[in-house]
Amino acid sequence: MRAENDIIFDKRKPWMITKVRRDMSLMENQLPFFVLENLFKFTFETQLETLPSLLELAYNFFCVEANLEAKPGTERMFDSKVKHLLDALRFWHLPTPQKALDFKWEKIEAIPRAKQLQAAGVKFRMSKSNCLFDIKFSKGVLEIPCFKLNPTTESFLRNIMAFEQSCYRHDSYFIDYVAFLGDLIKTRADVKLLIEKGIIATENLLGNEEILANNDETLANLFNSFGKESRFWTANIGFCSLSAASESLL
Image (cartoon, rainbow, N blue to C red; front, side, top):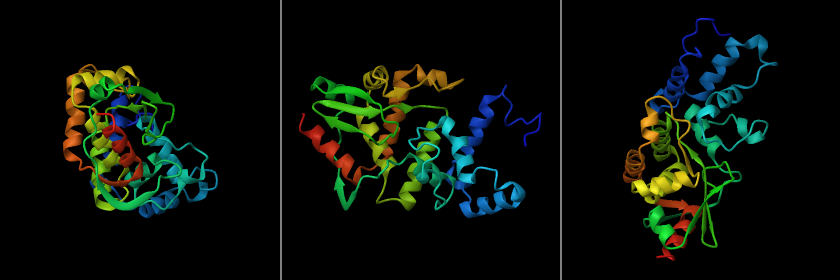
């Protein structure tokens, strides 16, 4: 279904498809998913029985540059009750099963930055989990899944946070996660520590982004900018317990 001279999928220009993924995840570019499904069924009407579902195709398209937990073949992967592609991207990142919410807002005090926690005796370890939100603190060890930076990370996070503010204010996994990272990362030393522990991975940054990958201060400023834009009032029990644990250390 691709032309030989297709400039989007040209292997000599890998950044083209990256830009397409970024544009398709912009909040202002979203179309209702039922519209996309109807177009898909209309276009491939005679092949529907042999083709994967539209959500499965979308997952395979986005997973190359995403920190996704869900694996192909699981029932929850291709739940068609999503509003649009950005909603699907958020859904695929959520933990299974999702942690309970107590529906009571709690103000989360700033968590000490990474180097301060290390000085207080906390050990950092990269979690083997591939769900971003599977963060655990036990017996002085803070386990955090690897967060893979790529050329679309900043755009994706800003759009998914704006979407949560509009539609998932009581279930704001990404807003809480970004605020958590914003607290942990304040300085170049914090970035360097988390990179050394494998908690932040920069190898997927390409081209001009290599400058970002090799500049701890720029990375620190990036996460600081996220933190400044994120309130940290949450009903998410997991983040509430993390905050309480950190307060007991200092």
